[in-house]
Length: 278
Image 1 (spheres, rainbow, N blue to C red):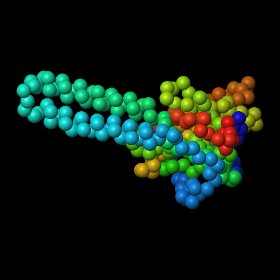
Image 2: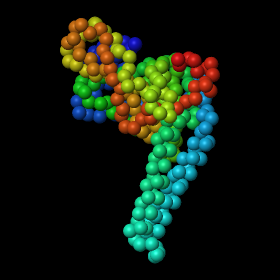
Image 3: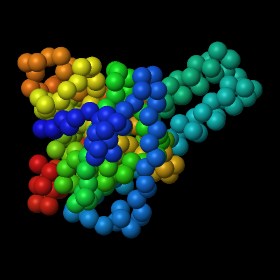
Image 4: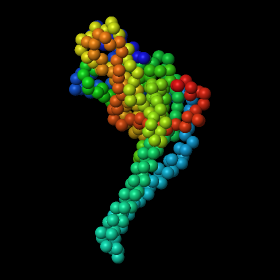
């Protein structure tokens, strides 16, 4: 459970350094200190490598190659003089493109959750999870720079999962709360980011008249080649201080951008080192 601290005010002292208030209809842009490559390489507790990553890579490469070839030669086939009538050539070209596109999309959907490699890292001993407060229902939007795990890690370990998008670009999803990962019913996937977080414990000593939203970053997906954030998975709780009977607040999870939510991991290949996230 997460304990709710006081909402920061002008004289709130140390709490004002941990929370940022987002004005209504505005974007919250935070400048964050980028951690070095040396820091990223330390604190590795366990590593996992998917046994079928090479096969999936070659299959996806083949499907994209055939789609590219079909896209190039289909117009040439239609325009090139032939004994086949134009209507027939258009039909053949359209059928070829549709078949190639469908197979490529199907392979992409099946393999999207496949985790090629996964790393379990220890969080910094000085890590303090950041919670954001907003005075409205507006979503808090961070900039497109990768976040600092020291700011958002809320558990002793963080999880990094590598996947591929439909264009074969490498994606890295960092899960700052691995304990929230759950089994999924999606085909060809084993884990998913949660649809809702645990209830938020309310501090009965908070003197607050207006309703507000508490947000916590659960996971973040980054395009490795471009270094930009693709999307984030947020846990949000809407707090109504006027409800005197409430001792905890139910929340929901929301996506910002297009984060990777589903993952396929062969759990039989996970050793005892991975038990720390169970």
